[in-house]
Amino acid sequence: MSAAIIDGKAFAATIRARVADHVARLRDEQGTAPGLAVVLVGEDPASQVYVRSKGKMTKECGMQSFEHRLPADTTQVDLMALIARLNADAQVHGILVQLPLPAHLDSDLVINAIDPAKDVDGFHVSNVGLLGTGQKAMVPCTPLGCLMMLRDHHGSLSGMDAVVLGRSNIVGKPMAQLLLGDSCTVTIAHSRTRDLAEVTRRADILVAAVGRPEMVTGDYVKPGATVIDVGINRVERDGASRLVGDCDFASCAEVAGAITPVPGGVGPMTIACLLANTVTAFCRAHD
Ligand code: GUN
Image 1 (tube, helix red, strand yellow):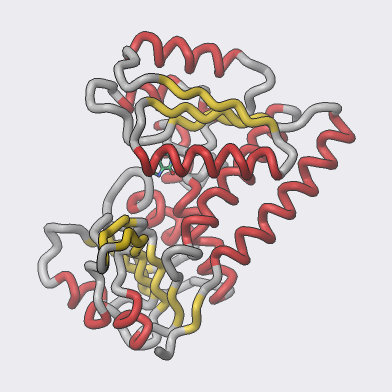
Image 2: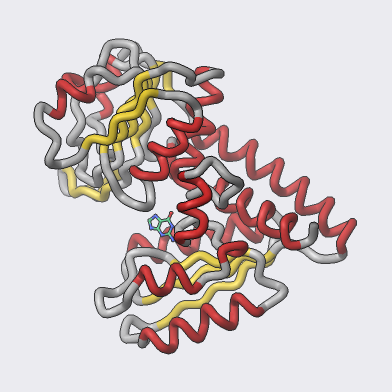
């Protein structure tokens, strides 16, 4: 293995410590702390793990955590009513609805019902539009975490060739916008892209966000490139359950200059950015 490991776990811990300091100061100055409401509908096991972890870290940073766990058969009307209550609640500065929602619920309607100022996920169309036009937006947590690691590793990203593999609203599209904002030449590749490995091999920065375990192998990577692995896939291996990324770590690390591991790369950065976004929402509300 030749690649440097980008330690997202350690970086996230420093961001959380900074958030905790900021929260303590806000509590002193304003007599109140930021509050984050997380809504989980149904019993998806991965979502339950993420929501538990978000709640725990929110409290560890000194913020208020409000968890709303709703049954899988919750109606659209009831969910919209909860969002309206959270929008009106002065103790709640950030609202996150864990995705995916059960199939009978319209997630676009739900996301766009969230007050954009409390939309710490940055998924509301107002925030998507602000980001796309280079204005002050709530920025989606996973791409923001990836950008922070890339800036930390490289300094300036200006002029670099970046390929984002995946075109989701949660990661791929906002990641491309952020890299463009940092003056990269950006390509969004996806499952229909022809000669995929030939396209990804042009990348100085390769962000893999396809949700397919270990799909990206070393032959997709330009020698010396930086590989950011957004995938978190649970697989059964040798009778045990393991988390793997969208990249085959061993073969990619042979070729890359730097790579994020799974676990311990992008995942912890996503939660740290969520906490930072909640503090940002609080500060903007108290300006
Ligand atoms: N599901 C997977 N990633 C995310 C995320 O960043 N935010 C929300 N709300 N749901 C998700």
